Length: 159
Image (tube, rainbow, N blue to C red; front, top):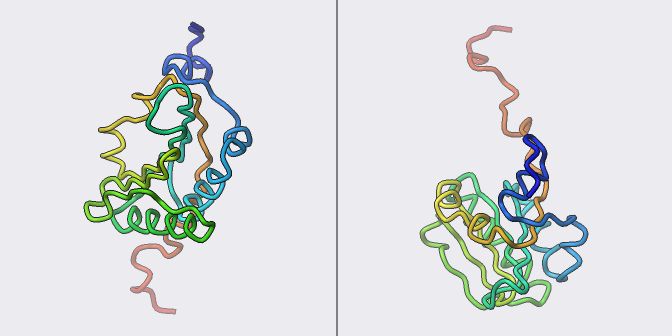
């Protein structure tokens, strides 16, 4: 094991992950690109793909992401299901649209996990499947969009 402190490969090796490129991961199943793009369009945070082929009999791929609020999690779950249905891919099973801490969309061989931050930390799927090949996708969330352009007290000023 590489033990160079501060090296990204070190952190990857410590977790047991094997990192792959985004293009390579998305090419492994036609639905993955649609899923990731839909989640990114809905401002999903920390989108991660795991290739579980040869590691699990339950699914070939996981796509995991985080939502910022209950409505955000619900919206992402609904939108990814709509996008999949429009493309001719019907989810086999869906859970969590009522509790909204964790929405699971199961396509049998591809499973999408949409978590609230606390639930994602608690279940730690990336750690559980740490020996799987993984890819992290860039957040499409622009922090400038989340920051109000008007400063507090603006309504007190006379122009």
